[in-house]
Image (cartoon, rainbow, N blue to C red; front, side):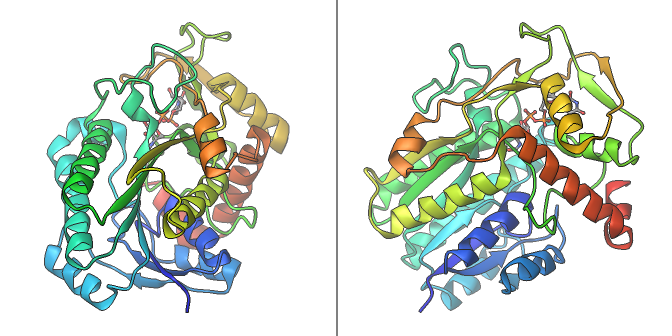
Length: 351
Ligand code: WQD
């Protein structure tokens, strides 16, 4: 009998890649998603890759009674991977209450029902934004949590605290929070990837859309940072490496290997790349020249951040395997797939 894993936000970017890796590892995947920032036909891609179309439930996790019905039907779930959340940093500054309500109520509903139906395990999708601009680099799990730069980042900090407090009160619950650095790239097949609805906030989808001619040119937000080439540095990690780490985290819980009921891991590569270095990697791995201009800094951006990955490497036995060139090549392959399937996608990316 396959163990059931609920993936909330499973039609999203990281969720869909994680669904693929879970299915490939022999799990039965259930997806809950309200499609507020994704499309159901992502499941076509998952099915083409794995031969399996995950069971999909289209509703909002903030609807407690609907979620209760789901738990009653699937109280045999072995674990939950909770991705579903709003995640646009800029939008969270304009609409903080939307972010606090959605990101926190959905988590609270899940935790409450996990206790009620004795579903013990949660892997939580957290973010390196909890560290703000670290004083010391690379940043480890023991690095101080600094005041969040945005309501979005604050919802991740508060969520980790809610999980910690709930686990103290309900001792059968277990959790692993995974703090992602910058997820980029796409599945090797080019059949699933990041599908930004509207104008992309993030660097790599903006690069690939510019290269595809959907955007005139890329704006590089600032070249006056205290970095070798003046542009900001991030730890970009391939989404497939990230997805594989989620499967390892679930297996760690199912085999009772956790050292404590509430663990936290940084998921990065340990390498920092500047914006200009990412652009150069894109051009060299795709052969496509990119048009860009240097503009002013973006409010809320940190200058430089990259991960100390020794804890995840040692404790999880996981290490990011794909380099920046593969990240760029797969992101480009996915963008070309989108262009070849314009009828289904182009209208979304031009909104
Ligand atoms: C990366 C770098 C920009 C766009 C955010 C969230 C984080 C996570 C990933 C959810 C920065 C520069 C960007 C552009 C640019 N999301 N840039 N021109 O801001 O590091 O992280 O997304 O979990 O939580 O905070 O990612 O891709 O937006 O920016 O120069 O058009 O690229 O200034 O230096 P970020 P990003």
